[in-house]
Image 1 (cartoon, rainbow, N blue to C red):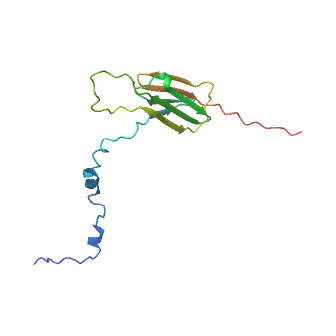
Image 2 (cartoon, rainbow, N blue to C red):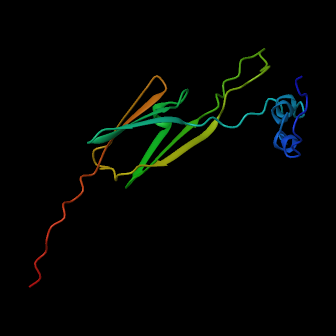
Length: 149
């Protein structure tokens, strides 16, 4: 005869409690007021940084910006990229903007690299919305012994 007894474990049920169960559903269904529902934050300059022994290569996505409106600053090992998207002032007669998801204003991105940059040799190219920076690493001066007289 098989036994149908189970051992009582008072902590078994406590261990299965999931206090945040369903929180994803709450936020998925969460709705802001209709006026704020379409509000989006400003776009961020997205970057990709690669390196080799001599330099860093930075690719930054900055679509819809003229190259004259991009500014790059290099200070030791800190790189700052800023770009400004200007609003078009031309108005077409008889047209009304129904919806605009375009961003106008200043975008800014700053990051720090592990090695100082030789700012005299920095090169920048902008093509098809991609800014490419070649940032040569500064050659560290070799340690030398100093003779005290």
